[in-house]
Length: 169
Image (cartoon, rainbow, N blue to C red):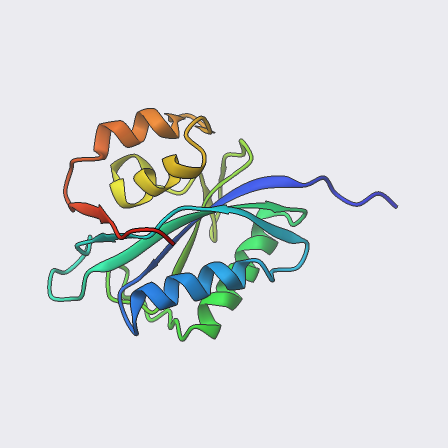
């Protein structure tokens, strides 16, 4: 029986609770332990104001590149297991504070929309806190239907919320 091919996947990582930098670093490390997946690259850390209600702490964000043999829904399940291990509670507060948020941004050149997953992740083109870290590790990746990460990042790099790189990881 042939094993499935390795496929690239990009994951957005964010936290604004419980020592956010440590949560993001720990979340990145945990991604490397998802079955049939390998962490291959990760961006530096970026700080930004929250996209949702302003009465919450700033976020720390990063993007990771993985190779996986899992189908997208199975990878998402592994990511949600990592979130729960970091104290993430899905309580319906869409823009609220969280210990760890993992978003499947893109999976190969796949487009998908169902009850549990939309690929590419909706809202990417407005999110500098996703695109700027992503362009560090995969500037030439073409997001299906949207264009290259580098071009998209250039368009939003100076938009709100303001982001800043937090130094070397």
